[in-house]
Image 1: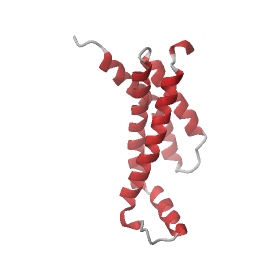
Image 2: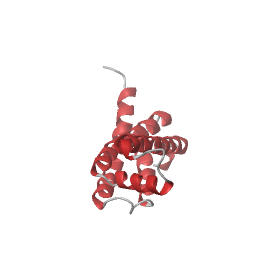
Image 3: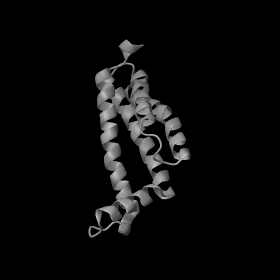
Length: 139
């Protein structure tokens, strides 16, 4: 099985997912925070406001949707870059994401972490399946 996985594709897809997660989380945080964040606030007040918004149900539910979309995109990208065995490569990027997520547990409510972890592998395989189906000849 390992010879079917493109390490290059998995690393690129994981890095792209990580970078897009960082950007999208900050955009979502700014969007949900709205006027709660102000440039005249002290660093401590800004950190407290960000922490409060990041713990809000609105942010957590939105991030669950956006983060799952990022995982679908990572699986899709891994499958497109690998060209062969798209589902194996989508699964591989999902496994890497799952392991990475295991090291960052504890900062969110338990329900958020459980649901996020349960969605990681199916979402990455779904993205790989989308890439595989796009490559199939039309009948």
